[in-house]
Length: 205
Image (cartoon, rainbow, N blue to C red; front, side):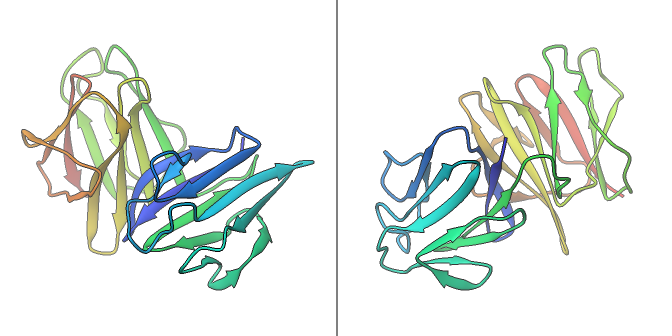
């Protein structure tokens, strides 16, 4: 299923699966994807699908919608297209394509499931549960961890290091005992993250 990865200032804040015929984007809370930024119009843009093609359309927004740096009124999306709405960057991923986004699921017993081999850039060490001692390698620019029914976090790798932010979920997530938010916080070696009762320690390699 095609998806969009939403980020702001290089920090991934949400992953959106395009499971509907019409996905609305804007600042108003009734949109399918809400952008909390004054530069975004209440009803800014919409992504729709017809005969397998996904199209983004600007809804006469105040500041416009940009795809790959160009202002658009309507644009048929292709894998890898970068959409800009206000301060937000939204990357479109088509079906059956490899991308630079990796998802790790923390299952009920605390086991970390990681797919693929990669170079070491950072690592989370699971500290408790049945998976205690196992490591999650942070090899991609963005890795999401957690369960949508509980909480999901995104760890983003940038030129100056890693940062972590809450993507979604009702279960509190903490970083060194402090509640983590969607705005993102920088990570240092030794930092402790707890999500859904699973404790993990970050190590920069």
